[in-house]
Length: 137
Picture 1: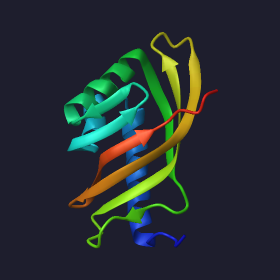
Picture 2: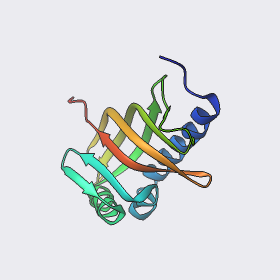
Picture 3: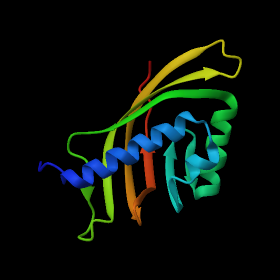
Picture 4: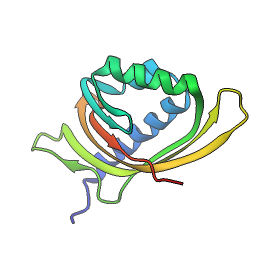
């Protein structure tokens, strides 16, 4: 496999860091803003279509626990350009986070893998499609 375009990889690494920072803020509206209006997420609870459903999904998560230490890392071969304009890519990688219940009594570390299609909106990359899994502990 060919190594990814260095500049594109750096842009998307910064995008991934921003994603983790927003996730750790536990702000559903800010999370939803990282996705396109027509985004789709494949989750362990089913398919989510559109930014409103995505915001509701994150709102539900953040009401049941506090997320911290979110990290996502693209694999060594990501990103992969789609087409020739350089404004759409697909990526794969791994993620981890810590979740603490609302009472602060129980904490768990979770991790898994993800795949995403992202599109450039000006200088910002937004997720159009995302799928992830959870590695059983």
